[in-house]
Length: 140
Image (cartoon, rainbow, N blue to C red; front, top):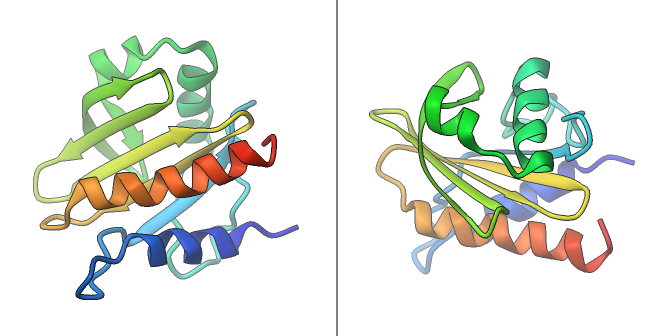
């Protein structure tokens, strides 16, 4: 099964009332090991290195985000500054001139989206939450 349609759904959810999208890339990885659920072939795929996915999944699975706090969040070959964690499910990061990332866990997956510089990360956060909460409602 391909999960790529979830990328399209997330990007559509990130549009504001004027139609501007506040997320430009997204992916879903497994909580247990960081394996990709979405493919890197999608035009708007957030391309993670396998080791980046493993590290992200490890932090979420253990609910220990100290690695992000001390070393930053490595996503798509960029290092984002850790901003905060909420409810051990939502992690936010930022990199000057590169934008921001939002990551939210469901029971079995982590939804990750990139907000370009100048975009509104709060809108991206809501779009990520829609997908993560939908997966959660399916028991995933």
